Image 1 (cartoon, rainbow, N blue to C red):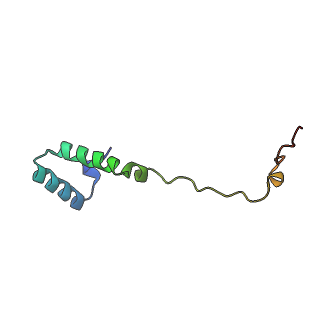
Image 2: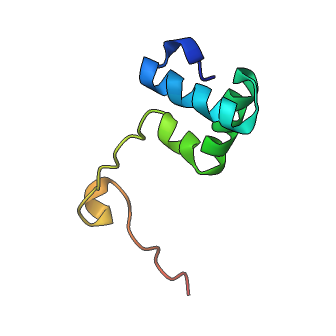
Image 3: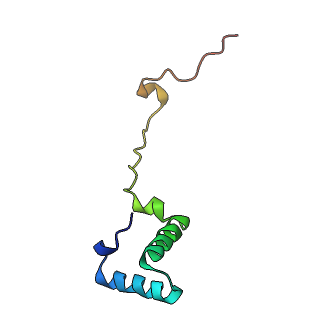
Length: 73
């Protein structure tokens, strides 16, 4: 979860200003910020990046696969 004390002083001031503007306490303000961030898709950006996909080039028979199945008829 988001820890207020670990944020930079400038961000702390902005959060405190938002709390005063809306008449919220600090806990409610932090909750609202996290909820809004998740709703806007921030959760997908907060995690580590996904691994890159490496394309495999070449026809199937070069990859150890048999290729298309023969028609049994």
